[in-house]
Image 1 (cartoon, protein in one colour):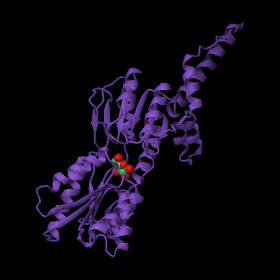
Image 2 (cartoon, rainbow, N blue to C red; image 1 turned 90 degrees about the vertical axis):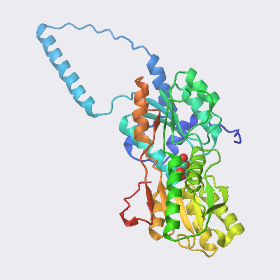
Image 3 (spheres, rainbow, N blue to C red; image 1 turned 90 degrees about the horizontal axis):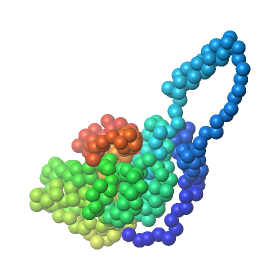
Image 4 (cartoon, rainbow, N blue to C red; image 1 turned 30 degrees about the vertical axis):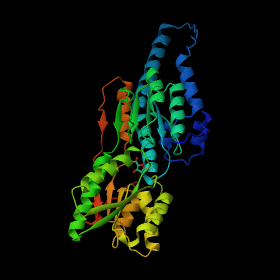
Length: 380
Ligand code: GYE
């Protein structure tokens, strides 16, 4: 992975926060800028000055004062039960970027869940660069957050920064994607989809579709996600394993689309130029690349969903709408709603409790085998 020179300064917390469009009020209140964090750290060390009050009271006045005092304390307790109390957990989260509807939905969900759980969230967007993620994790360590979470853009290259987090005694949660390392105990758990299973579900759909169309030979092109990322590796492996025993299937080419719409279009143009009408199936690792590829297929004179079988992954609203139009045949769900589990897990870690090492959400397949009008709004 290329290294980037312009790592972000701590000011970027505030800049990102103030520059962003405002969502729900609660969401904003759960975000925390660096000035607040410094104040919080200083506040921990600050010793309260003792006020000296000398008051002379008669016995009656004393009873009145005690009654008033109890009234104030009790009403304060009652209010405290409803109003969010002082934040108990400071969570640093390094997000990969904003490359897809999935990613944007994932960020929004984490912000909303942080607000609901009363968790202070330091959120950093790495704009698709691993070195920005590493710099963000170092800032979280410097700010002494309680828990660090991050979605690693690729699997390799995290050992040093995670050893630093470990020696600072800060637990690390992997969100969405996994890492690959020889060192044990760098992270506590992974909360994310079973990408291998998603690939298997895509392959199994294709076998059923080939059966229903009585196809004798099936030529596949694969547009893959970011090279060396967990979803790229496992969505490919699951799909290939699922179709391996079916002699009708031939993979013409796998091409790197980086999970990005414009790259999906570019890849599709190149594939059409090479293989033209030999292509029976496009298997694309995410909705964004699929949505980029479809107009290219149409420009080349083919009808996606009819002349070519289109299989996508994620299940965002836009892809589901296109499935309803019949231009996509199958979308394997990958839910971005990981925020609730993340908050629950982070709170447990803060309390020193044990957590599950692997948490996979339940996922399903949307396809032309069912009535697509029954699919509920997706929310991302
Ligand atoms: O499929 C894609 C996103 O890691 C599951 O990353 C995630 C993938 C998702 O950009 O749209």
